[in-house]
Image (cartoon, rainbow, N blue to C red; front, side, top):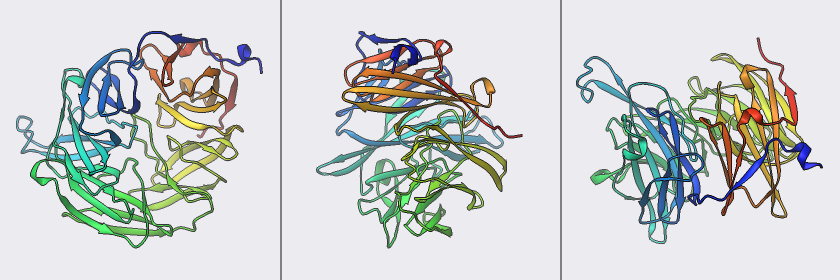
Length: 422
C-alpha cells in the first residue's frame, strides 16, 4: 500500500512535553464551551486545559490509584421560587458511564459528581469528585468528598437521592451477584440497601431515565427501579442467549442524550425502549464486540454501522452497513451533530506500528459516511482526542503524540452511501 496516497492527513510528531496518564473522562465546562481531559496516573488525577494535554490545569493527589470512574450530572428544576433553590427544587440526575460524559444543556444544571473507585490490598474505596457549575473554569470548581470503604467492585451508575453532593452510588460486588446502593460521603458512607441474585449479573452503564437499572442474568433482561430505599424489579424479558459474549452498549457521546439503548445477546443486537421496557427491534449480527457507541461496532467480520431512525417511541427502523472488512478495536468517539453523527475511531497495531481509521457519519448532514486513515504510526496509540475549536485530532502513545491538520484538509479514502430515512 502506498501510504502517501492513502494517508488522509499530514501527521506531526509533537516534541512539546505533554501530561502522561490514562484518559478516564472529560470535565465538562458549559460556561467556556470546552471539555477538559481527565487523566489517571498512579495515585494522581490530572485535569488538562486542552485536548493536546500540553498544559496542566490541576493535579490531585489520591491515597490510591483509580480503577474506574463514573459521573452523574445533578440537574435542578426550579418549580416556583427562583430565589430559594434548595427548598423549591426537585433533583434528577443525568448518568454517564466510564470514559464518557453525557451532558444536557439545561440552564439549571448545577453540579456533577464523579465517583472514583480505588482498589487496594486493604479493600475497595470510593472517593467523590464534586464539580460545581459556575462561571469560572470548571477545573477551578472541583473538590473532593470523603473517601469511603465499599463492597462495590464494579461501578454501574450514580443516582439521585435528593441531597446535593451526596448522590447514591450503585455497583456490583466481586461475586457479581449482589447489587449495592451506597451513599457517598460522611457518616452516610454505609451500604444503604442491596439485592442478591442467584446468578452472575451484567448491568448496563448507559444513560437511563431517572434511576432505572437494566441487567442480564444469562436468561432474562431485568428492569430494576430504585424507590423508597430499595431495589424494585419492574419487569423481565426472556432472552435466548447466543454463543458470543453478551454486552450492553457503551454510550460514549458526550454533549448528547442518546435515545438509543442496545443489548447484544450473542447473536442479535436488540434496541430497547427503557420507558416501556420493551424490545422494539432487533438485527442479527455474528460476532459483535462491545463498542463505544450505540451505532458503530467492531465484529469478527469487520466494522459495522447501524443506520437507524426513531419513528416513534414504539418503532425504530434499523439497517446494517459494513464500513470495513478489517477487524479493529474501537478507541475514539467525538460527537458532532445528531446522536449518531460525528467521528468514530478504530485502531490496529502490528509489529509496533499503528493504523487508525476514522469514520465521519453524516458530515454536514449528508447521508454518507466518509472514511479517513492514518497508517504506519510508530507505537501503540493509547487514546485519541479532538479539539472542537481548532478541529485538529491528537493521537497519544505512552511517550509521544501526533497532531493532524484541520479536519477540513483531511483527504477521505472512501465514502459509504447511506440510504437515509424519510
